Amino acid sequence: MMKTTYHVQSGKTKSWEIKKEGAKQATKTFETKEEAYQFGRQICDENRPSELVVHQENGQIEDRSLYNS
Image 1: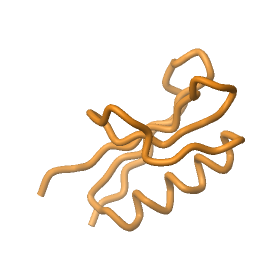
Image 2: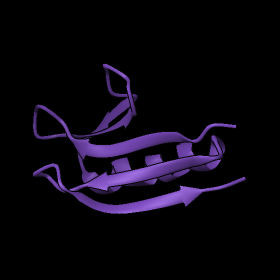
Image 3: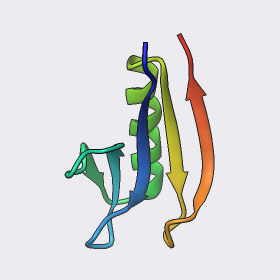
């Protein structure tokens, strides 16, 4: 089974979003990074095996978490 990767990244309008790798649009948008992170943890936990990649506002990777089966 292939791993699905989700990204917590800065949005276009001072927002934070969860985006599935390869998708053109965000899965969901949030006001804060913490809200996006918590949702990302939940969606990764529900869709194992998966990976959550958290980015800083400038786009650099801050953290990675693996969710295995």
